[in-house]
Image (cartoon, rainbow, N blue to C red; front, side, top):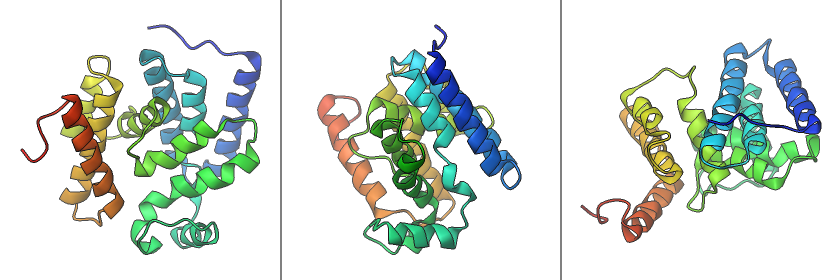
Length: 214
């Protein structure tokens, strides 16, 4: 597989983001820092394999958990101030907020990055019915990066990389996340079900899976 080739400006940007993230996380969330840097490398690798811009994947991976250092109550408060609406009490969806809030706040810190980077950051927690290839790369990388403890579902997704389409790899990762929420008896955001059902219908129409309802 080919290696990523970056301009000097891109290398400088990557270095600055990694330094900023280290300053933000190293003292309070060292494991989250290691995870974020691992996701960035994994996203870069996936991008190269699936013909996605590796620079955008790398920087989105670096920043995807930027707000994981923010206490839950503060994150909910920020989300409300930003007018973020999930259609349910935001306290119920705290695990999903860090990506969406960061995507609203980071453009002011890094105006040189394009909007698709911030969209991928937002969608790595929620997914969407119209995921772009970059969105899918970051979502999958978050789920399968090497430092994440493997499960049967995670290993299946890892094994699919390079053998299946990016859409199929994302689909397996997305469904695995839903399975995890159900198995651990956690609150399942209704919007996730809406996304799941819409994707089931789309994939059925495209012949990717068995017909809906079977």
